[in-house]
Amino acid sequence: MTSPGRDRRINIPNKGKKDQNKGTNFQMSRPEVGRQDRSTKPKPRQGGNRNFNRGNNRRGQGNKPRGLPEDHPLQKAGYARVLDHDVEENVIYALSENPFVLSRLKPKEGITNQMAGNRIWIGKDRSRREVVDTVLGMTSVERLSNAASLDLPLIIQLFVEENAGHFINSFFNKAGPLSLKQHAFELLPGIGGKKAQQMVEIRGRVGFKSLEELNEKCGIDAAELLATRFHQEMSDRDLQPRLVELLLPVKA
Image (cartoon, rainbow, N blue to C red; front, side, top):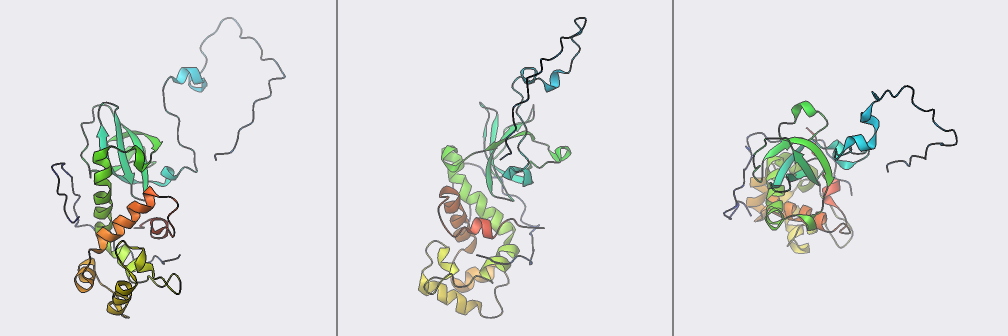
């Protein structure tokens, strides 16, 4: 999974800028609004003046989407990676980076088809939004198109590779036993107890300095394995422990 092997074009971001954050430790409704008191009848309008504020009238809003609640996960989002652009529905499906949340976005007027892998800003600072007009809300893996579902693990892997320093320091150099019978490395697909012990012995006290060193010494593709685990957790909310929550967000 080190390179996209399909006709579908993936726009791979520049890997020159990698987040080398080293400070993360590996650790294992909106309120209801009451109805207004209508016991007092409103006063009738005077003189037929209709210059009232329609912005506060729900009917006057038409189909304008409402804003997200303050406690919504996407309120914390900044950048996102495009998974699919449904031109007919005029909706972009994307994966926000911090945190990992699948989202539905309404593009601005005149925006052309966005390629899978494009990195776009969806944060609160609207002045930085060049592609997105409105963050519509979240979606799930099951509701993605077939092409987006196939690209999702690759998009996650690109993110892991671009932030290799963070994942080396927060997981591969710090992961320890989860119990007497299981090591945290065994959460990665295909890593059994014997292989996990070998990785611990190779890591030693010094640790790994890069993904390349880790892959060469341990004979694995660490970014692919971690991305696959993230994808599994996004598809199965009951899968525990959740590395996607323990290792994210990546802080600059």
